[in-house]
Image (cartoon, rainbow, N blue to C red; front, side, top):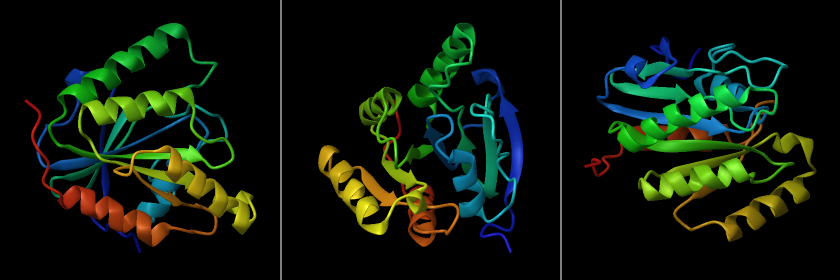
Length: 200
């Protein structure tokens, strides 16, 4: 059974005019292409192919809005850093994401997806800077933790935590063996409940 039985896809947006109504609360999922973002969403919601996965990196090329329950949404943003996407497409995504982060009043938090074997990329650091400037809480999922031995995974978790501001929360996560699933769900639910200072 789905963790969110009322969860459903609402719509995709190719520009800011197509965003759903800016009410309630939502948490967006961001990450480098091929970081395991769609798989993480599917496992957290407990729905196969809820967010469409593909062996081809960069599959998510639109802003996808999902309703988890009334006035509570999950937003799947385009994966960044995919080399085969045209420069015009990258520029278009950049404009959409900038508008989203600067103007979205219902945005209560960011789930950043990072492949534990790769660590933070330049794009991840840019996203952290944007989130800090806009005062949006960030929670990082270090995905594919099953690909490393337990001791090495924990070591990388501690190293990353030491490099980030204390306000940013970080955890290990695996879509394969579901490590960290309960923690991720609790964090998501907490962000969706949390009242944040409205952007002016």
